Length: 183
Image (cartoon, rainbow, N blue to C red; front, side, top):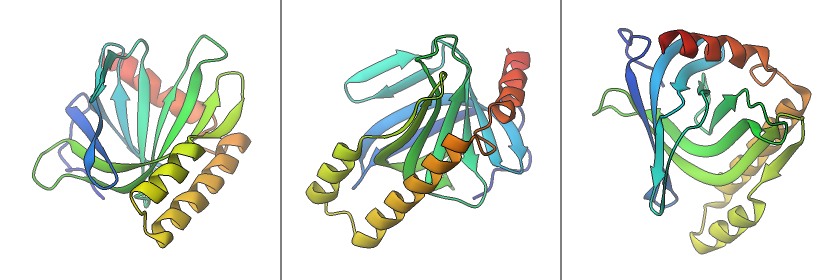
């Protein structure tokens, strides 16, 4: 997975997700921020739009998304919420995360239901296990795909609980500050 070498901070990025086996799901507006050892960072500023069939909203605070280097099975969203019960880290378990070869600035992925969530007060959990089980049966996820998604979710859950970078807070803070400077 790579981004064009001439990408500029602030350049528009669209994340386009589907559900298995290809039905429409979330699309999210954002901007290119840059890269580091963890991967590619996207800004999702307050006011940026997120939509899917049946839902449409605008972000209420700045956030960043990490498209990890060397992995195609998750994308993390990170923020600094003031409310201790609000989400600080949200890791979407995905399949086939990749940059579109046809459209500049478009990230494509298949959402695989499971999410690792940490609230600002530190409560960390694996979400949507019931949805994962139901969709696995309904859409007949291949056994190896289901196993890989579940295994990755468990590893990410442990990393988020431990605060392993990039889930340590300070890593995202630098990118959130960079996003604020673009505004």
